[in-house]
Image (tube, rainbow, N blue to C red; front, top):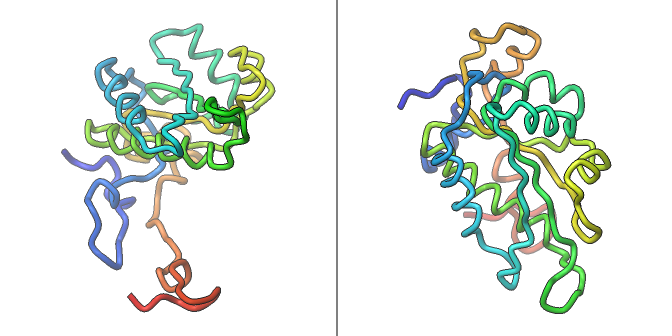
Length: 204
């Protein structure tokens, strides 16, 4: 399957799985729906993510572009800058974290970490079927809580777009499309993998 934007494939220093190298956060999508069976597989992958004490502190709200009312409702939960490009995706997802363990009512310090693990599973399952995912911090938590009647002890965390990424040249809005151009960069391993004490790079 051809990558929609080859310039965004990571140029890694060490070999990694192709899906990991090909993951990026597109701003330009083909405005078409995602097949229900693919969405089910994405959420099934998220369902089987690891979590502390198997708590599974995640809840997902989903809207698809072929349901106009639900789509508009979900878009309103995004910050305006994200609405401008997310409207072309195939599906929108809101992630919610449960703040306390059901087993004892105590705070779950790693709830958001575990939600992120589930989203990572979802992301790579989506890619396996030819989709791409863009994760967003830019949500209006108060609007999301009211819209979906999210109870106390559960907090909206992020939003995701899922869909068929398009080459930036296909985007009508070039201010948005230019975000999808250029090579991606990351810090070197020497800055993020340490051993012994802070600031000492691990000798791998």
